[in-house]
Amino acid sequence: MDVRIIVETTFENGTTKRHHLCCLSRPFRRTQPEGFGLLLEDAKMILGQLQKAILLDQFEEISEASRICPDCDGVRAIHDYRSRVLDTLFGRFEVKVPRIRRCACNAKSDVVLGGPLSPLAHFFPDRSTPEMRRLQAELGARHSFREAARILETFLPCAKQVNTSVRNRLGKVAREICDSEQTEPVVPSAAEEASALTVFLDGAHIRCRPEYQKRHLDVVVGKVESHDKCRRFGLVPQAVLSPASQLRQDLMALGWDHEPTVTVISDGEPALPNLVRVTIGGKVRHILDWWHISMRIQHVENAIKGLLQSRSFSGIPVLFKRPAETLRWYLWHGKVLTATTSLQWLMFDCARLPTDDRVVTEAARRVQARCRDLYSYLANNMDNLTDYGRRHRAGLPISSSRAEGCVDDIGNTRMGKRRRMRWSPKGAHRVAVVRAAVLDGRLTGAYQRAAA
Image (tube, rainbow, N blue to C red; front, side, top):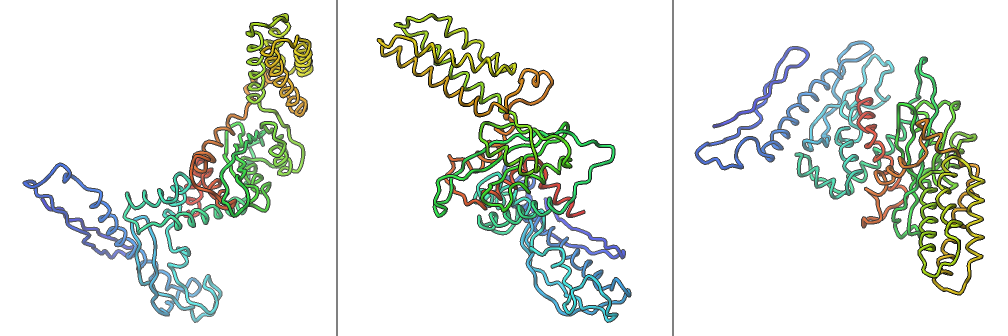
């Protein structure tokens, strides 16, 4: 059988135009299993021809409409024709479009004084469609730049893709995301009350390019949550002039208006809550992550278990076993002073053990080291401890596990240490911004608002 594909275009003035795209032949006597239906190469060819037909008709209609002066409804003259290249998902096309002269009425319009109007340049200043830039940025944020270029060439009839083009387009999209969020004011509804926000923070380390004289870069990732919304973010403090201003835009996007309380949950790194303090310009409620506390308690329990299992242990087991069993309960219910007192007694009892046996001595030193580490960790973050059990029963977060997930989603998956690529601060910042927007679905939404 033979298949002919014909497209008919109907313009606003009622005229029609027909385009003969292509003809496919499927003789049934010589058909193989891979010859049934529409093949990938056939689909790419049809999409390319269809895109060309639609674009030519659109350019013709827009050029005719652009000749009408918006002030006096007169017909403006054509200055000349210029060839422009437009890059789309379904091919790269070179078209000749007219440039329109200014009207003789000498009224101010959207045309630059002294220069002709180019309709195509007005719609596509980057000489590519927004969907093309968005898909290049999304694939570049999910895969390596070479892999993103290969995926585009495999499944779409676009022009030959180069990894540097994908990287440059991702950088432009990252700048557009930051600029649009800074220029678009967030106006909450009158019936909506500003809710308390919780910021989950963590850091990721990625490999740095050798010319920056350092091995790793620090990427701050996290998530901002309210009672019904959430938003991921990622930034490299060395790549932006004001990291606080970018984080402030993320807070304002969720309805923060300098009034509601901001709660920060992170580990004991002081730079992370300080970033939020600078962002909001005031005090924040910092809560120490329970997971990091629990892991240090687990280290103490394992060390005491090893001490009690020593054959030459001559102490009283209950003096070591009982504090280890109650230590987690004390910290879970906010009894910090009782927990630190138990740690001091554990270190004192380990120091009183006889030092004749080398195995017992090493096990006791290990218990003392683990207790000292936990005691220092609690002492340095005494103001950030709370009643974790009460918060957990109230349904409030007590762990920075959401930030840990962002470390995997934004940092390690695309820029992890196991990958061979090294990053500059600016390149890592752009990838983190775009990847956070992709995971939240904000990348598609931004381009839809621009198109509307």
